[in-house]
Length: 250
Image (cartoon, rainbow, N blue to C red; front, top):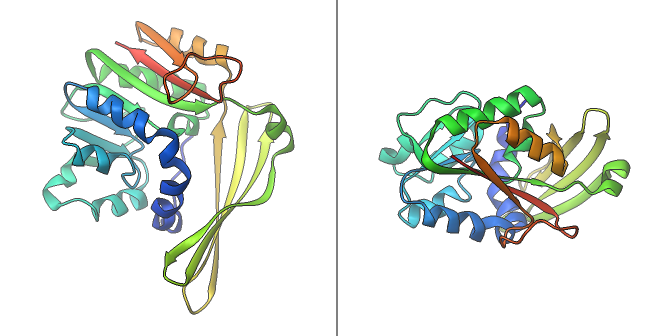
């Protein structure tokens, strides 16, 4: 089951995640987009963290997302004639007039699908929307077993100014469901608008994966071949890896 990003989360998304995430995966995904010979689709396009940079690099890129709040932020960055490049749709059943040489689902998008039937449906629907020889790339993190067991308790992992003299913070708590392989997360966003303090909560869940589970899932899908890399530098998966980068080939 996927979950919508609320408007207060979308409002501060760029500030938080450009700082927390850009150095991790930007170069990898932008390089893959640059290598594509045709159209590209970003699933979970959000506020356009990767999309806008790719578009400025002249990529023929499109985006879908399930969150109206995130897409509204992205629309403010696009000229009106470019609004047709993005749409409110789900990976499991999106309908577009194009087929793609590359489809990407960056930054844990695939982990929001906690049901295995939806996971397989998503993979196969992506496959059907690729051109022959096309690729699907998504990433999920390799579970840290100690963190899974212990969880997080009100950890402030971001604080910064969203306007001069006005701070926003993100505080995270996690509670693992080891039986269903789900991490239940509570995000608390706190900000000062110059008049009063605001606090908003958002609950979300991520389905974590292990190596052989991912392999079995890919082998059940329509994809003819796949590879799992261990980091955003393109290195082979090994015991020190912290990421699963899955590349499916049509």
